[in-house]
Image (tube, rainbow, N blue to C red):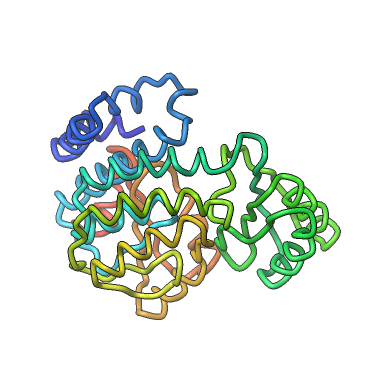
Length: 294
């Protein structure tokens, strides 16, 4: 994760070095060499993805790219705030490590679950979650596109909702291999612990507007940014609405920075008219720079 950029981009290498210094251990070595089971621990995964994303961003900015708006999916909102100049990278990487710990510890292992439901409108998903809530917490967690929603909650309730989704004609139902039920009210204890950290961090007003996960609206103040990060922990990610808002603002090009192209795929589900690029390694950096005519 990020090794190609580390080896070819001085600014990307600097980001990984700053992450290592901020955390007090070699996150870069964990990203590049594993072991995989340790990297998959939420407390390591979150800072690793953040570092790789900001490294990719820095490499692209070194080519001359500038964002007009920023947005990030869940953890990605921290990367977006670093891009917008609201958070210091060191504050962000330390915070997301603790965020991962808090979210992991909020629900005992095996008691929570998440499932991706494909091919059902959000109104149908909300209805079946309400029905499944008779056996536990169950609610939309990631509203990713008009036809893809991830639900979260107590394991029995999520499994019941998954059964109902199949009966409602879902194209696909996938129980996700996650360590905790993120972005639902079971994360309330994690949000409470995170609040004590966020209040101690300086959030500057943003250089460019951010579209928030929790409200799918534009913000520019540091106070709003802090509040949004806190509330998103136990609230659904309104990604579909966020992308639609950006399109409404005249955005026609999206550049995804960081590992993978999941968000690009979701944007494509929302609108076929957008131009998409991603940056996760040296090759994709060159391709993105060329498409942006940098």
